[in-house]
Length: 290
Image (tube, rainbow, N blue to C red; front, side):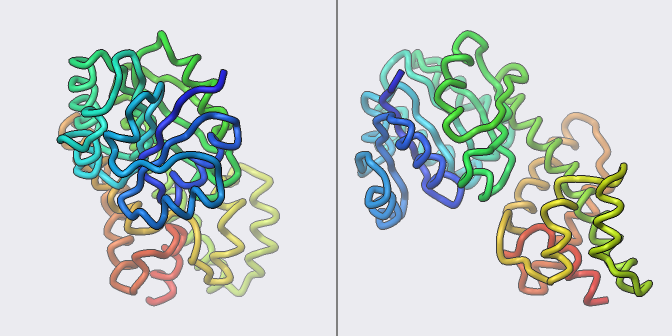
């Protein structure tokens, strides 16, 4: 069933995600803080342009959000021009931003007072996954309308899973980033080791990727790491933001994340090398500076 949708935030992820919804035949109204980006989107896809999040939300059955951080989420949700000023009772708000679980619960409480369902729904798969419609979505929220929502998000997701009440999606994304941090660091160390040992690292990767060491990072990033290409994918700045969220959550729930804290500092080293916008696989560049 085609629905009236709003999409707030047309960054490297939101832009193609909103595009997939339009291509699926839904009626999509977009809002972006930088208007020229929204105008560019309208030249490429069919839809409408809103001048505020509130206007985008008017009449929408589902409002999708994909902004930067906790403060950005509060900014587009609250106030006279915010999403909550324009929503209709019974609609759904789906937040694809990676945020804290705390702010997700805060937004859900505000939505409940207006008869609106809120789902925290961070994604994994990066820019390429968004462009190819192959994202994985981790959701927290009400089970009653999950199937209805999934029928829409299937336009850009290969898999989605409801993991519990609001906040669960964000907690799952923290686990995702914790895992990635360790895997990328391990891969970077292995590649540096192989180079220093005089091995043909590409040939070695071809072998070990068939065994227990295999990972998405190995399959998709090892070749570009060896070529010292880091100008694509998920930026170091974003990863540090995500790891900070995970480390703060760990303090509150009693978890110990020594490896995550260490790799976060390694990413700080990459930033000092000028790699703030490099892909997260740039941990190898740091080792090669030693």
